[in-house]
Image (cartoon, rainbow, N blue to C red; front, side, top):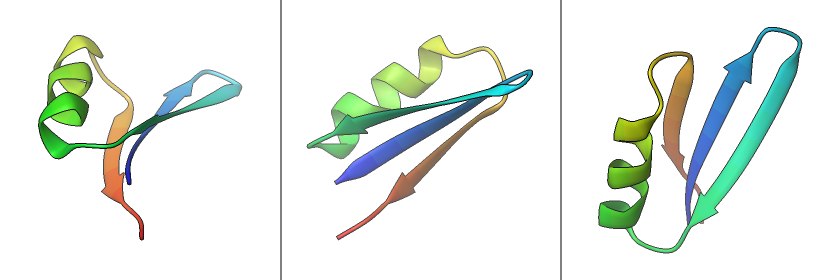
Length: 40
């Protein structure tokens, strides 16, 4: 599972994706403060 974690001031948002392509496309939409990770 691919996970994008977005840090926005005092909030943390987490988005889960099944494929790397889908996750990287979504990551491109976040301007800053986002991290893409992979978990089993």
